[in-house]
Length: 484
Ligand code: NAD
Image (cartoon, rainbow, N blue to C red; front, side):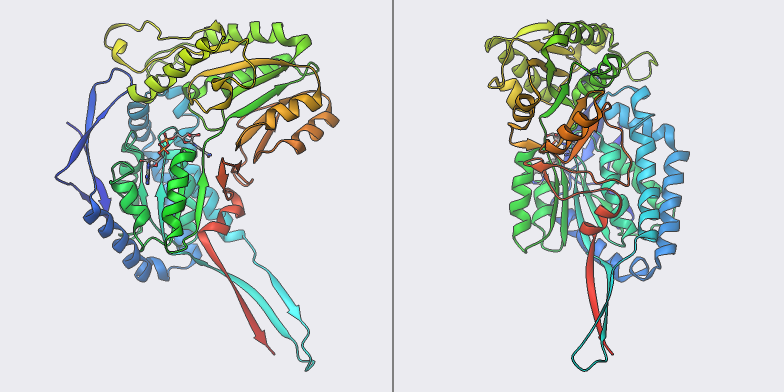
């Protein structure tokens, strides 16, 4: 049986307490994860502090970024191992993970190596009463040891999206991967050693949230800053933990993202993007669209075409190149998603397609599969229109005017992303600017330039990641004033 170990101070560490890692494909056990206790978490935080005092803390930016470029190349060289591990943990299709998760996992080290080398700071020349003046300039310094708490939906991608900039800025990290997806973070430990990342710079502790590695890490006062991606509820707990010791937090949290389809859209474009935004990664994408507002004249045609697209999706094992939808991440998550499927019907939804568990052959019948699902006949008060489900499902609702749809789209406590489909350029700018979210796509979805700001408004997050925006969190900006 595969043993999935912690990675502390450059070494793989077993513990006396283990939990099963089951694959959602057929619910079979694929590994035993060694849960870190308080002792291991404290050791990881201490190792990270020691690393900052050692060679890592003394490296030039160029030396550090050379190593990070090697890390990216080594992930690419071991692409197939990362791909296998990610697909086994999550059940996602290889066609998706080989296109998104693993290449982005590598790219996150390269992009932030470039950002840190090229980011200028500020300079102000200042007049003083004695006429001699003063010069002000700012320099960036690492914040120290960063606690990185990660979700399961895009495990390597979202973890390196934090670890890449943290290390580029000269910090050391302790990563707590999701208990559902422990493998690629562990594999990255091998890569770090192979590339000469000094011991203690990158650490991984496995376990759960409360009374386990997540809580031990976020409450450890040796952690100087905490970055988190996951549910809003968990983010609030982490925010409270960070308040003790007044430590900075970066929170990327849940969403209930609207898609707005105007009658003047290019229907082919809207359908292609919406099928992805509703069903990609089995609907387990924070940016996914679980509420669709479609202008009344095209409502019936849009629903019919979305239904046809959903029914063409092929559920299957990751290795089948024809597969474009895997299972949900776990049985537990499936129970949650299915409870929403039931609630939608109880509250009066018409099920356009899906709504249940698909028939899967052989052992796969034990997996966490659900059908891609579309509802109509609900209004904005329905539970499935208000709460984040994080499954392959969406509610389609008609609208009649631009003002009406803007109000309805914004009527949520979340504020992560929105997508707008129209060929009227004035309307595109006008509507995009009024969306109360951190990210708007016009005539597309999940088109990401990694230099641009990423993050949520309202209860979807605090702070922005991406490009120079990540530097705001992973560095302390220090002003130096020189009196001449
Ligand atoms: P989750 O909040 O259940 O878990 C995330 C991580 O937090 C896990 O590692 C978990 O072990 C840990 N954790 C849980 N309780 C904790 C505690 N008390 N203290 C410390 N750590 C704790 O989230 P999830 O189910 O893994 O991920 C799905 C959620 O993530 C969805 O809500 C989704 O919208 C969100 N998400 C957001 C973004 C974004 O960029 N905004 C990206 C991906 C996912």
